[in-house]
Amino acid sequence: MLESNNGINMSSNGLAHFNRDQFIGDLEREDHWDFIIIGGGATGLGSALDAASRGYKTLLLEQADFAKGTSSRSTKLVHGGVRYLAQGDIALVYEALKERGILLKNAAHLVKAQDFIIPCYDWKSILMYFAGLKMYDWLSGRLSFGKSEFLSSEAVIAAMPTINTAHLKGGIRYYDGQFDDARLAINIAQTAAEKGATLLNYFKVTGLLKTAEKLSGVKAVDLEQGKEYLLKAKVVINATGVFVDDILQLDQPSCQPTVVPSQGTHIVLDKSFLPGASALMIPKTSDGRVLFAVPWHENLVLGTTDTPLNSHSLEPVALDQEVDFILHTAANYLSPAPERKDILSIFAGLRPLAAPSKKTGSTKEISRSHKITVTSSGLLTITGGKWTTYRKMAEDTIDRAIKIGKLTPFDCNTRNISIHGSGSPAVGAVAHLVAYGCDANGIQALMANPAMAEKLRIDLPYVVAEVIWAIRFEMARTLEDVLARRIRLLFLNAKAAIDIAPKVAGIMAQELGVDETWQAMQIEAFNQVARQYLPEKDLPANANKIS
Image (cartoon, rainbow, N blue to C red; front, side):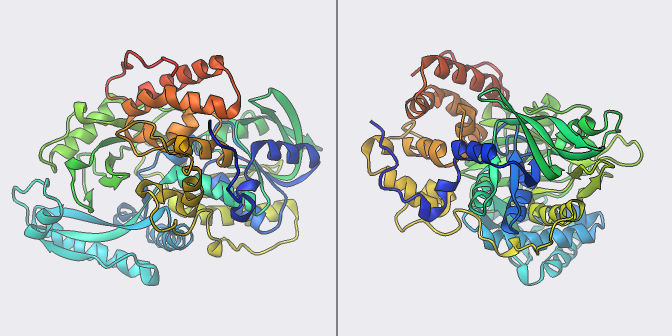
């Protein structure tokens, strides 16, 4: 049998504040909010934390799971943006480098300094990149992650034994940040709850309420229970990423598009394709962009693409030409060259880029900086931006929202708020649990029960206790929530995730008190999503089997 919460002091670490049933209770007791935030990605969650930490009554509603969309599908970089420096966007780079340093300070369990090596095959490139990265160092100031340096060809090969050595002249090493995006999103949500925010996943906004032409709240549906709510607020904030226009059209049906979706696709390979601790930065691809190969959870993430799209969805699908582009580019730098058969997982995300004033067939010219707009009814919409600057985007959003709602102003204090989990686990913690920070101690307390310490698959590090933890303390509601955004396996190895899905569904069913019908529905729904992460779309023969 799986044990209950006994032995875990939930109130001391804030976990008691992150419970969906409790949040539903808040919803039914509260008749008016200062802010209702629509969207549970990085920007929405950051805004909820900012608002709640200033003392405002804050409600966040997310139609799916937290970080289901773009915010779980990044290149796993916390960075200033070397590419934007080359484009001359100094202000954006400076802001991002400052925010990078704040993130490292406040969430050191998930953010770490990562060295990147740019291999150079002519002396002109060495001079150009070295000069540019010294500017990058200078802009970092006291928040620098490390000084850039020239490497001889021998040093590059020593750090990256699989690098293409033909005509290699040397390389430049520089430092940026690396992180786990979806886990950071969950931890930000937990921190917001600890500051008093109410946050609900699987809660869809279906309409806007108005009084005398001014926005006064939202109409929303609990997708789990089918119950509709009319919720009043002084300010409604639209932080829905690529879906912002859907919400804007609820306010003004004839409004023009404000964002341009751009798809970024990544592939995941075994770490053997780039052994060692260093990441690879390819400074100029065939279409004039950059490509990264980044160590992540003992695997290697390669990406990304930048493909303009005319539509958006919760589960974007990588295009074959995007995968081929990544493989072709990597083949010029890695030996042996990765092939489609080597891919462990493929994932695609949509960037909500602020729409340009004139049509363009390229996303290069579209600003990566964020933009705040307010409609005549008072709907505040935040668009653009990137994960690294989520905190600053949230600060700007709440500053503006305070003015719209004519609320008593209080200063932002998120520069100095530690994110939930920040800190080190106890000595001797299981290695892969480090991503949980000090929450690893709670998981290991559960693992004192041998049933909780059982591995989900013998060759994987994940254990039963992590599934239970995700349900009890991280608001995981579905099989996909657990496998994609709590333990991250779907993003790391899609076949392995499909293989253990029946076992995880069984564990969840026991914990949630649901039947085999629920298990079968969850497995089928998960497999539909997971199929898109496979290099070949055929599911294993036993994929729908209930454990």
